[in-house]
Length: 326
Image (cartoon, rainbow, N blue to C red; front, side, top):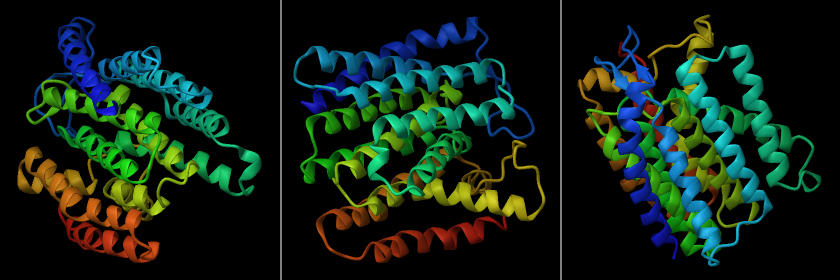
């Protein structure tokens, strides 16, 4: 059942994105290259609008089918997804100042955490940490959408892995259906975003991707489907790259609100002269290393710190090498 809705999301995204592409040109949702860009030609952007539209329609179809029953927290998260997508599209069209964007991120994250979890059951220190973490996830996903296909591919890989691991853990049909819808929607968009990209997802798609994967992590943790280390392992390529890059820039005294192209994946793309090779590297590393470790985290009692060490060590070695590249 979940897979059928994933296929619906895939088909709807292909249709919606194909329809949106000429519209983006007419409405001037265009990304012109600059000194930081990894692309050389003016490219239509904000394709995340089509992705989120397909997700929302599939979500509603699942509810109307009578086979899936979304509860109030899930309905709230869908509304927040639409709000985040709208904020991203606004930023794609006319950049939103940092002093306005960051408070909005924290507001959206606060509503998400407060509406999705029972705060009375959480230690006082935990819920502010979760709000900060979700707000940061929105930001970091935007940071990691700097080369063709990279962020969309990560979304497909993480949601697909959560789908498989959730099935093994006895997850609800609703959780599995959401995973499948995300996979289908972002896989459909990847057809247009694969190098060389015909369309960028823009902030409308990257912010939405961050919220969606954060939602899956919260859901899996709330329902005890899998240890938190599983989600952290799957997200570690993005978490490590953004975290270490932020710390390095802070130590150099750079303005943290200033856009740049110094993330490790961007350095690797310049070093290899290829976006596609970086995407394949992410696919192989996730499939051959991180996903098997996540599976071990679900089916075995191996200590979480051991799994994290195994997942992070090769990445830290690679990051240390890439930090020396221009």
